[in-house]
Image (cartoon, rainbow, N blue to C red; front, side):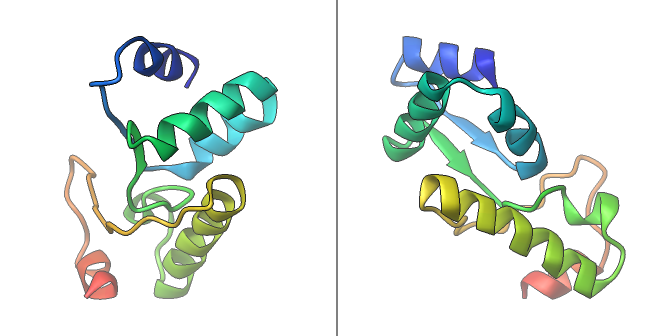
Length: 107
């Protein structure tokens, strides 16, 4: 996310969506306080948006309904703790499509 933040800060018209919170968590552990502050500011001003918000995209790593719900819950807790946000959009952007379980869970 280093370059994402750098590029968003260069041009306020740019936007970025983040889906898998697991990657953000890994980056967050090593990020400087300034990087964390910048990321929070970019989220607050609408340049950085979180969609779905699971640790991973459910169809890739969580087979059961319980695992999918836990995946989303863990990701949402991280986002709420650090950004005061929980995604409002349950967008499955997997290029291979979703299983029948994901739309059923979202419905």
